Length: 369
Ligand SMILES: [Zn+2]
Ligand SMILES: [Zn+2]
Ligand SMILES: [Zn+2]
Image (cartoon, rainbow, N blue to C red; front, side):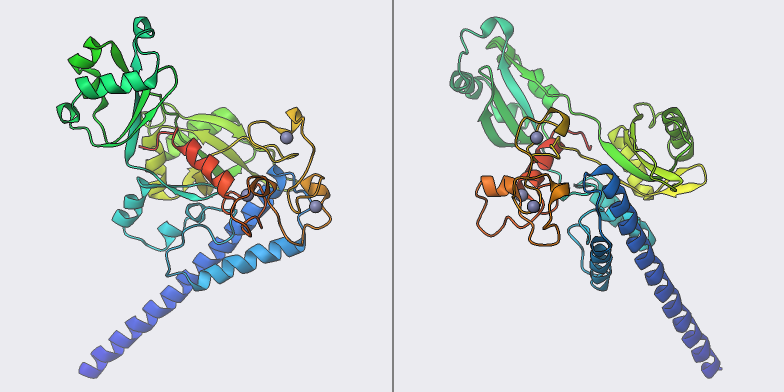
Protein backbone atom coordinates (compact mmCIF):
# COMPACT_ATOMS: atom_id res chain seq x y z
CA UNK A 1 0.00 0.00 0.00
CA UNK A 2 2.66 2.47 1.03
CA UNK A 3 4.70 1.46 -1.99
CA UNK A 4 1.80 2.17 -4.21
CA UNK A 5 1.31 5.55 -2.63
CA UNK A 6 4.99 6.23 -3.11
CA UNK A 7 4.62 5.23 -6.75
CA UNK A 8 1.76 7.65 -7.18
CA UNK A 9 3.74 10.36 -5.52
CA UNK A 10 6.73 9.73 -7.79
CA UNK A 11 4.48 9.82 -10.82
CA UNK A 12 3.04 13.12 -9.69
CA UNK A 13 6.52 14.53 -9.08
CA UNK A 14 7.60 13.36 -12.51
CA UNK A 15 4.55 14.88 -14.07
CA UNK A 16 5.17 18.17 -12.30
CA UNK A 17 8.74 18.14 -13.54
CA UNK A 18 7.71 17.47 -17.11
CA UNK A 19 5.03 20.12 -16.94
CA UNK A 20 7.41 22.68 -15.62
CA UNK A 21 9.99 21.74 -18.28
CA UNK A 22 7.33 22.25 -20.94
CA UNK A 23 6.35 25.52 -19.39
CA UNK A 24 9.93 26.76 -19.42
CA UNK A 25 10.26 25.78 -23.11
CA UNK A 26 7.07 27.59 -23.92
CA UNK A 27 8.15 30.67 -22.03
CA UNK A 28 11.55 30.68 -23.72
CA UNK A 29 9.84 30.32 -27.07
CA UNK A 30 7.53 33.23 -26.29
CA UNK A 31 10.47 35.33 -25.21
CA UNK A 32 12.47 34.63 -28.36
CA UNK A 33 9.53 35.14 -30.66
CA UNK A 34 8.69 38.42 -28.97
CA UNK A 35 12.28 39.52 -29.37
CA UNK A 36 12.17 38.68 -33.07
CA UNK A 37 8.86 40.42 -33.61
CA UNK A 38 10.18 43.50 -31.90
CA UNK A 39 13.39 43.51 -33.89
CA UNK A 40 11.49 43.19 -37.13
CA UNK A 41 9.12 45.93 -36.08
CA UNK A 42 11.98 48.11 -35.02
CA UNK A 43 13.54 47.66 -38.41
CA UNK A 44 10.46 49.15 -40.01
CA UNK A 45 9.89 52.02 -37.62
CA UNK A 46 13.49 53.06 -37.17
CA UNK A 47 15.63 54.24 -40.01
CA UNK A 48 18.01 51.35 -39.59
CA UNK A 49 16.63 49.38 -42.51
CA UNK A 50 19.78 47.41 -43.11
CA UNK A 51 19.38 45.05 -40.19
CA UNK A 52 21.80 42.20 -40.69
CA UNK A 53 21.47 38.54 -39.84
CA UNK A 54 24.20 39.20 -37.28
CA UNK A 55 22.02 41.73 -35.48
CA UNK A 56 19.17 39.22 -35.25
CA UNK A 57 21.47 36.48 -34.05
CA UNK A 58 22.83 38.80 -31.39
CA UNK A 59 19.45 39.66 -29.87
CA UNK A 60 18.31 36.04 -29.90
CA UNK A 61 21.49 34.95 -28.15
CA UNK A 62 21.02 37.72 -25.63
CA UNK A 63 17.42 36.71 -25.05
CA UNK A 64 18.41 33.11 -24.46
CA UNK A 65 21.30 34.06 -22.21
CA UNK A 66 18.89 36.14 -20.21
CA UNK A 67 16.70 33.09 -19.99
CA UNK A 68 19.26 31.09 -18.03
CA UNK A 69 19.04 33.65 -15.30
CA UNK A 70 15.28 33.56 -15.29
CA UNK A 71 14.95 33.50 -11.55
CA UNK A 72 16.66 36.82 -11.10
CA UNK A 73 14.26 39.65 -11.46
CA UNK A 74 15.30 41.52 -14.56
CA UNK A 75 15.47 45.27 -14.46
CA UNK A 76 14.84 45.61 -18.12
CA UNK A 77 14.36 43.37 -21.09
CA UNK A 78 17.21 41.17 -22.14
CA UNK A 79 17.29 42.48 -25.67
CA UNK A 80 16.79 46.12 -25.06
CA UNK A 81 14.10 46.39 -27.69
CA UNK A 82 11.17 44.76 -26.01
CA UNK A 83 9.70 45.29 -22.64
CA UNK A 84 9.40 42.23 -20.54
CA UNK A 85 5.75 42.88 -20.02
CA UNK A 86 5.25 42.61 -23.75
CA UNK A 87 6.29 38.99 -23.72
CA UNK A 88 3.43 38.18 -21.42
CA UNK A 89 5.81 36.24 -19.23
CA UNK A 90 4.48 37.46 -15.95
CA UNK A 91 1.21 35.84 -16.78
CA UNK A 92 2.61 32.62 -18.20
CA UNK A 93 5.01 32.18 -15.34
CA UNK A 94 2.14 32.19 -12.93
CA UNK A 95 3.23 35.07 -10.74
CA UNK A 96 0.57 35.52 -8.15
CA UNK A 97 -2.10 38.02 -8.90
CA UNK A 98 -0.93 40.19 -6.06
CA UNK A 99 2.68 40.31 -7.18
CA UNK A 100 1.68 41.15 -10.71
CA UNK A 101 -0.91 43.67 -9.67
CA UNK A 102 1.42 45.09 -7.06
CA UNK A 103 3.99 46.05 -9.66
CA UNK A 104 1.40 47.68 -11.87
CA UNK A 105 1.03 50.82 -9.93
CA UNK A 106 4.68 51.42 -9.30
CA UNK A 107 6.48 51.28 -12.61
CA UNK A 108 6.23 51.88 -16.30
CA UNK A 109 7.95 49.40 -18.57
CA UNK A 110 8.53 51.37 -21.69
CA UNK A 111 8.51 49.55 -25.01
CA UNK A 112 12.08 49.72 -26.36
CA UNK A 113 13.07 51.70 -23.32
CA UNK A 114 13.80 51.64 -19.63
CA UNK A 115 11.59 50.51 -16.80
CA UNK A 116 10.80 53.63 -14.84
CA UNK A 117 9.77 53.58 -11.21
CA UNK A 118 6.81 55.85 -10.73
CA UNK A 119 7.28 58.35 -8.01
CA UNK A 120 4.69 58.42 -5.28
CA UNK A 121 4.76 62.19 -5.23
CA UNK A 122 2.62 64.62 -7.14
CA UNK A 123 3.29 68.24 -7.81
CA UNK A 124 1.19 71.32 -8.25
CA UNK A 125 1.79 75.04 -8.60
CA UNK A 126 1.06 77.95 -6.30
CA UNK A 127 0.60 80.95 -8.58
CA UNK A 128 -0.27 84.61 -7.99
CA UNK A 129 -3.79 85.39 -9.10
CA UNK A 130 -4.20 87.31 -12.35
CA UNK A 131 -4.55 90.70 -10.60
CA UNK A 132 -1.74 90.03 -8.13
CA UNK A 133 1.09 89.62 -10.62
CA UNK A 134 2.61 92.97 -9.68
CA UNK A 135 2.81 92.15 -6.02
CA UNK A 136 4.26 88.69 -6.63
CA UNK A 137 6.79 89.57 -9.27
CA UNK A 138 9.23 86.88 -8.20
CA UNK A 139 9.00 83.31 -6.97
CA UNK A 140 10.89 84.36 -3.86
CA UNK A 141 8.06 86.66 -2.72
CA UNK A 142 5.45 84.03 -3.52
CA UNK A 143 7.38 81.47 -1.56
CA UNK A 144 7.74 83.70 1.49
CA UNK A 145 4.02 84.48 1.49
CA UNK A 146 3.12 80.85 0.96
CA UNK A 147 5.17 79.77 3.95
CA UNK A 148 3.52 82.46 6.06
CA UNK A 149 -0.12 81.72 5.17
CA UNK A 150 -0.17 78.00 4.62
CA UNK A 151 0.88 75.66 7.39
CA UNK A 152 1.52 72.21 5.86
CA UNK A 153 -0.29 70.74 8.87
CA UNK A 154 -3.50 72.49 7.74
CA UNK A 155 -3.66 70.22 4.72
CA UNK A 156 -1.64 67.24 5.97
CA UNK A 157 0.99 68.05 3.37
CA UNK A 158 4.10 65.90 3.21
CA UNK A 159 6.35 68.12 1.17
CA UNK A 160 9.32 66.68 -0.63
CA UNK A 161 10.49 69.74 -2.46
CA UNK A 162 9.69 73.38 -3.20
CA UNK A 163 11.02 74.83 -6.44
CA UNK A 164 10.61 78.10 -8.28
CA UNK A 165 8.35 78.08 -11.30
CA UNK A 166 7.64 80.53 -14.09
CA UNK A 167 5.69 83.78 -13.67
CA UNK A 168 6.37 84.10 -9.96
CA UNK A 169 5.07 80.64 -9.18
CA UNK A 170 6.23 77.99 -6.75
CA UNK A 171 6.02 74.28 -7.42
CA UNK A 172 5.21 71.99 -4.51
CA UNK A 173 6.14 68.35 -4.78
CA UNK A 174 4.52 66.30 -2.04
CA UNK A 175 3.64 62.70 -1.16
CA UNK A 176 0.05 62.00 -2.22
CA UNK A 177 -1.20 65.50 -1.50
CA UNK A 178 -4.88 66.29 -1.09
CA UNK A 179 -4.82 69.09 -3.64
CA UNK A 180 -8.49 69.93 -3.22
CA UNK A 181 -7.81 70.68 0.41
CA UNK A 182 -5.01 73.07 -0.53
CA UNK A 183 -7.27 74.69 -3.10
CA UNK A 184 -9.91 75.29 -0.45
CA UNK A 185 -7.46 76.81 2.02
CA UNK A 186 -8.91 80.26 2.82
CA UNK A 187 -5.66 82.03 3.75
CA UNK A 188 -4.11 81.14 0.43
CA UNK A 189 -6.89 82.80 -1.56
CA UNK A 190 -6.83 85.68 0.92
CA UNK A 191 -3.18 86.31 0.09
CA UNK A 192 -3.94 86.46 -3.61
CA UNK A 193 -2.51 83.04 -4.45
CA UNK A 194 -4.11 80.09 -6.15
CA UNK A 195 -3.41 76.45 -6.87
CA UNK A 196 -2.84 75.33 -10.42
CA UNK A 197 -2.47 71.74 -11.50
CA UNK A 198 -1.02 70.62 -14.75
CA UNK A 199 -3.45 68.23 -16.28
CA UNK A 200 -1.66 64.97 -16.90
CA UNK A 201 -2.04 63.10 -20.16
CA UNK A 202 -3.61 59.70 -20.59
CA UNK A 203 -1.11 56.84 -21.01
CA UNK A 204 -0.36 55.21 -24.35
CA UNK A 205 0.36 51.60 -25.15
CA UNK A 206 1.73 49.84 -28.22
CA UNK A 207 -0.04 46.63 -29.25
CA UNK A 208 1.70 44.06 -31.44
CA UNK A 209 0.01 41.46 -33.61
CA UNK A 210 -3.14 43.40 -34.50
CA UNK A 211 -4.91 41.89 -37.57
CA UNK A 212 -3.91 44.22 -40.38
CA UNK A 213 -7.36 44.48 -41.95
CA UNK A 214 -8.77 46.25 -38.87
CA UNK A 215 -9.54 49.95 -39.16
CA UNK A 216 -8.87 52.42 -36.35
CA UNK A 217 -12.56 52.40 -35.43
CA UNK A 218 -12.76 48.63 -35.44
CA UNK A 219 -9.69 48.32 -33.24
CA UNK A 220 -11.27 50.73 -30.81
CA UNK A 221 -14.73 49.24 -30.62
CA UNK A 222 -13.71 45.58 -30.77
CA UNK A 223 -10.92 46.03 -28.22
CA UNK A 224 -13.43 47.53 -25.82
CA UNK A 225 -15.97 44.78 -26.48
CA UNK A 226 -13.45 41.93 -26.11
CA UNK A 227 -11.28 43.30 -23.28
CA UNK A 228 -12.85 46.18 -21.38
CA UNK A 229 -16.30 47.62 -20.89
CA UNK A 230 -17.96 50.81 -22.03
CA UNK A 231 -16.89 52.65 -18.91
CA UNK A 232 -13.20 51.71 -19.13
CA UNK A 233 -13.21 52.23 -22.88
CA UNK A 234 -14.67 55.70 -22.72
CA UNK A 235 -11.49 57.62 -23.49
CA UNK A 236 -9.79 54.98 -25.62
CA UNK A 237 -8.44 56.32 -28.92
CA UNK A 238 -6.50 54.70 -31.71
CA UNK A 239 -3.56 57.04 -32.20
CA UNK A 240 -1.54 55.38 -34.92
CA UNK A 241 -1.46 52.17 -36.92
CA UNK A 242 1.95 51.18 -38.26
CA UNK A 243 2.14 50.13 -41.89
CA UNK A 244 2.05 46.37 -42.42
CA UNK A 245 5.35 44.76 -43.37
CA UNK A 246 5.48 42.79 -46.58
CA UNK A 247 3.90 39.35 -46.13
CA UNK A 248 2.82 40.09 -42.58
CA UNK A 249 -0.79 39.67 -41.58
CA UNK A 250 -0.51 41.78 -38.47
CA UNK A 251 0.51 45.31 -37.56
CA UNK A 252 1.36 47.22 -34.42
CA UNK A 253 -0.72 50.11 -33.26
CA UNK A 254 -0.65 52.79 -30.61
CA UNK A 255 -3.60 53.48 -28.36
CA UNK A 256 -4.33 56.08 -25.75
CA UNK A 257 -6.54 55.10 -22.85
CA UNK A 258 -7.57 55.89 -19.28
CA UNK A 259 -5.16 54.83 -16.52
CA UNK A 260 -7.72 52.38 -15.14
CA UNK A 261 -8.11 50.74 -18.54
CA UNK A 262 -4.34 50.33 -18.82
CA UNK A 263 -4.24 48.65 -15.45
CA UNK A 264 -7.10 46.33 -16.34
CA UNK A 265 -5.23 45.24 -19.48
CA UNK A 266 -1.91 44.81 -17.67
CA UNK A 267 -3.57 42.59 -15.13
CA UNK A 268 -4.58 40.21 -17.91
CA UNK A 269 -1.26 40.53 -19.73
CA UNK A 270 -2.74 40.20 -23.20
CA UNK A 271 -5.13 42.06 -25.44
CA UNK A 272 -7.59 39.98 -27.42
CA UNK A 273 -8.54 41.24 -30.86
CA UNK A 274 -10.65 39.06 -33.15
CA UNK A 275 -8.88 35.69 -33.16
CA UNK A 276 -5.54 37.12 -32.08
CA UNK A 277 -3.98 37.33 -28.63
CA UNK A 278 -1.76 40.41 -28.71
CA UNK A 279 1.20 41.46 -26.62
CA UNK A 280 1.51 45.09 -25.61
CA UNK A 281 3.69 47.47 -23.63
CA UNK A 282 3.73 51.02 -22.34
CA UNK A 283 4.54 53.44 -25.11
CA UNK A 284 6.34 56.66 -24.29
CA UNK A 285 7.79 58.64 -27.12
CA UNK A 286 10.30 61.44 -27.05
CA UNK A 287 10.62 63.42 -30.27
CA UNK A 288 14.06 62.66 -31.64
CA UNK A 289 15.54 63.36 -35.06
CA UNK A 290 16.79 60.31 -36.94
CA UNK A 291 19.16 62.49 -38.94
CA UNK A 292 21.10 64.44 -36.29
CA UNK A 293 19.77 62.54 -33.25
CA UNK A 294 18.96 65.75 -31.37
CA UNK A 295 15.67 66.00 -29.51
CA UNK A 296 12.64 68.18 -30.16
CA UNK A 297 12.37 67.96 -33.94
CA UNK A 298 11.98 65.30 -36.61
CA UNK A 299 14.25 64.54 -39.57
CA UNK A 300 11.94 66.38 -41.97
CA UNK A 301 12.55 69.62 -40.06
CA UNK A 302 16.24 69.04 -39.41
CA UNK A 303 18.61 71.94 -39.99
CA UNK A 304 21.65 70.29 -38.41
CA UNK A 305 24.48 68.29 -39.91
CA UNK A 306 23.42 64.67 -40.32
CA UNK A 307 25.11 62.12 -38.17
CA UNK A 308 26.45 60.37 -35.41
CA UNK A 309 24.38 57.36 -34.63
CA UNK A 310 27.01 54.73 -34.43
CA UNK A 311 30.49 56.07 -34.63
CA UNK A 312 29.99 59.79 -34.03
CA UNK A 313 31.10 60.37 -37.62
CA UNK A 314 29.33 63.01 -39.73
CA UNK A 315 26.84 60.87 -41.62
CA UNK A 316 23.41 59.41 -41.05
CA UNK A 317 23.20 56.22 -39.09
CA UNK A 318 22.02 54.16 -42.04
CA UNK A 319 25.12 55.13 -44.02
CA UNK A 320 27.56 54.15 -41.34
CA UNK A 321 30.08 51.62 -42.53
CA UNK A 322 31.12 50.83 -38.99
CA UNK A 323 27.77 49.65 -37.70
CA UNK A 324 29.23 46.41 -36.50
CA UNK A 325 32.03 48.16 -34.67
CA UNK A 326 32.02 50.35 -31.61
CA UNK A 327 28.86 52.34 -30.96
CA UNK A 328 29.20 55.91 -29.87
CA UNK A 329 26.40 58.21 -28.72
CA UNK A 330 26.94 61.71 -30.07
CA UNK A 331 24.54 63.25 -27.54
CA UNK A 332 26.51 61.82 -24.65
CA UNK A 333 29.81 62.69 -26.30
CA UNK A 334 28.63 66.27 -26.68
CA UNK A 335 27.53 66.48 -23.05
CA UNK A 336 30.69 64.82 -21.78
CA UNK A 337 28.76 62.20 -19.88
CA UNK A 338 31.16 60.32 -17.62
CA UNK A 339 34.04 59.16 -19.80
CA UNK A 340 33.83 55.75 -21.28
CA UNK A 341 30.07 55.62 -21.00
CA UNK A 342 29.28 56.78 -24.50
CA UNK A 343 29.37 53.36 -26.17
CA UNK A 344 25.72 53.06 -27.16
CA UNK A 345 23.35 54.22 -29.87
CA UNK A 346 21.80 57.65 -29.32
CA UNK A 347 18.43 56.02 -29.93
CA UNK A 348 18.89 53.23 -27.41
CA UNK A 349 16.60 54.29 -24.60
CA UNK A 350 17.78 51.52 -22.31
CA UNK A 351 21.46 52.51 -22.50
CA UNK A 352 21.54 56.25 -23.17
CA UNK A 353 21.22 58.23 -19.94
CA UNK A 354 20.16 61.37 -21.79
CA UNK A 355 17.36 59.65 -23.71
CA UNK A 356 16.43 57.74 -20.56
CA UNK A 357 16.09 60.98 -18.63
CA UNK A 358 13.94 62.50 -21.39
CA UNK A 359 11.62 59.52 -21.16
CA UNK A 360 11.46 59.86 -17.39
CA UNK A 361 10.60 63.55 -17.71
CA UNK A 362 7.89 62.68 -20.19
CA UNK A 363 6.45 60.04 -17.88
CA UNK A 364 6.04 62.67 -15.17
CA UNK A 365 3.40 64.29 -17.38
CA UNK A 366 1.43 61.10 -17.88
CA UNK A 367 -1.23 59.85 -15.53
CA UNK A 368 -0.57 56.22 -14.62
CA UNK A 369 -2.80 56.20 -11.56
ZN1 LIG B 1 17.88 66.83 -36.67
ZN1 LIG C 1 29.69 55.91 -38.83
ZN1 LIG D 1 23.78 58.56 -25.01
